[in-house]
Image (cartoon, rainbow, N blue to C red):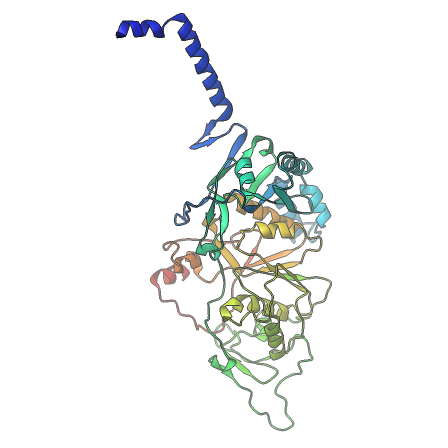
Length: 485
């Protein structure tokens, strides 16, 4: 038997004590070389903790299903750009009518030279090429000045690089499309000074909505109240001006008492439209004396959430309102199809409305379709920073709930917006239809309160309201009434 005294002697003998201290020192050394604590996150000392998933307001998004290690997933490295702190000043110089540099917009090359970070992009590319094989990763795209580097790789590669674990998520917020995401991530220490953020890692797509109400089913023209078929004109008379005159179709025939807004118009084929906004209503209300443009400039419409443009509907609209026939000039990422409305008008309503009215207000201007499929705002940022011939107008009728978007994503988006403005690009976005509560309240995402819309809240975009000539829509809910009015 051992008594307390014998145990104490054995533990305190010089030889055993020395061995114990050596082992303790080795263990301590191993621990300090592999792990450090940052907040509540254990991070390898070879890495720097960057971000957690921004899901405080979305606790319903969760998953226990680990992503398969051999599954492929695309991430976007946003390289830290130079002179970002000076961009707003430069933008104001060319945008302020009182500035002596007003209208002196920069070229894409000048903006690129001002913000390019060659050291940063070289560091990212070098790390990827030295740590992973071509079987594990592939560089899918690099923007013109390497502001963004898009890389497709296996999940196990990203788990190793970002010291994290990926899970597979499926949710209605991105229309039940399976995506891979981590709840947090860290950057290799050697890249910390060069990378602003890595998209598609710990940032989730935000719920998106367009600005128009849903209408289910097929809507023949006769189903709209206030739309009267053409009457037979007396012999020798004309039912309206010739449609061969660009920009002067469906003239206003009377005005209503509310703020002098026109509430009745007539199309070239004799249809009377009472209480509806037509191309003529827009021109009359906003004093657009000439809708005819040219090919020296271009304009683009941003679409998402499955909205598809129907070229055949566009042609029908142009014929009906006497607008010069014109198709779209180019399409990015598809979602342009004649059968877009076949299953439901909801699949094409937003896209059709946006293109039809933009192209009737700005006629003969090459118009580009740009589609982004539930992938945050990063895809759009990569696209516009890769264009050599950027459309001079971007129109967007969609928005996210601003508090749902991470600070890093909003900051990066605003950086690209300033760069576009510096090049003379006008960025227009719908202000939203649901007042300060935003559409998320009606969809049950949150309670009544102030929920700003993004990107209409961005200081570098112009938020545009609607034009309504008759109070067809009534608001009855207490919160909506209080918050909107």
